[in-house]
Image (cartoon, rainbow, N blue to C red; front, side):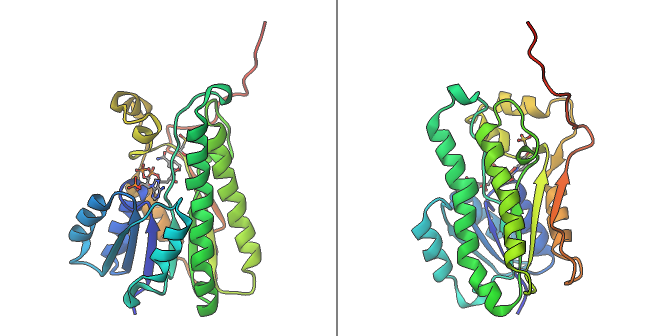
Length: 251
Ligand code: NDP
Ligand code: 8X3
């Protein structure tokens, strides 16, 4: 049986780039996201290379997560690698002006969805004593910035949750990794700025951000190191990005 990789948020950005790279290696793929048309296009692109199963899934829907995983075809039931990638930032407003619905959506997607996927897939990995979970966090989980409030906090959860999983899984062969990328050009900013292309483009203007392919390379590497090696945590920025000084408000 080929290695089976399940990727959430496979319809664009990091998820789609990972699907392309794992497909080149002939891995079996389970690709999930809400936009089925995107998944269908990806499936027809990759089907020559590997066995692809797609399913529309909103990771915030707990019952749908269970249903999708319980009804996977036999060929794709044993998940070897779970890439918990589905996630988003909505808006950049300060906490006192933010839309509470945006906060709820970020928490439900970035935290609750990731927890539910993990909880559903982990028992099978433990039973087989085999598997690797890669959780996509963000530099925003470690380094606060104005307007990053809830988004950053959800990613701090992902970082700490991943360490907790590693502690729980001691004594098994299951590996757990948290990857925290910095600025990467995907549909991330388009989503954050509610489809305002100009605002999204301005994030990457005159800079060389990471690409989705850069991140996919790292994810595939992390899951390809020798079986006794666990990359716990990895923070990656483009060369053009760094921290700023602490801010001071003066009279
Ligand atoms: P994209 O917007 O290109 O991709 C996000 C993916 O998440 C899409 O495939 C989207 O699919 C999916 N998604 C969003 N909400 C849901 C949901 N409720 N259920 C299922 N799938 C969902 O952005 P990126 O590729 O950049 O983002 C991937 C991950 O990387 C996210 O977790 C993001 O927070 C993180 N990240 C991004 C960085 C960046 O600068 N780009 C930096 C650090 C971390 P669909 O809409 O079809 O459901
Ligand atoms: C995405 C990176 O810095 O825009 O997680 O929050 S940042």
